[in-house]
Image (cartoon, rainbow, N blue to C red; front, side, top):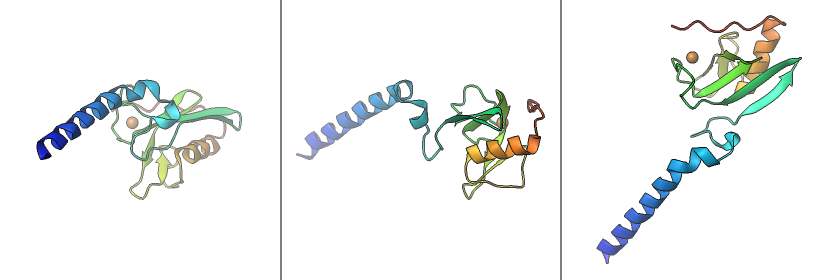
Length: 122
Ligand SMILES: [Cu+2]
């Protein structure tokens, strides 16, 4: 009975879609990344707090479209993902690293204690 199985498939798809709609509210932040976004992190590195999380799109102007937000002492550090999956930040454009956390650490190294200035809106 092709018609019945098709209907069943559509029903199953609708249930899955409804479940997916509520997913972001219930999954932990570390699992909220879609596709292959890295998970969230939060640590103190060399005395400075670095945090990262998949960007939801709500709090970011998104001109890079990186889909991931990194913060140093609460100030957003712009990171960009290269086509090969490596990451760079606005502080170290020419030193690709493997992960957003590594980019945040590299930025702390680069800043040498200086405060990170908010990136000007453009
Ligand atoms: Cu940006």
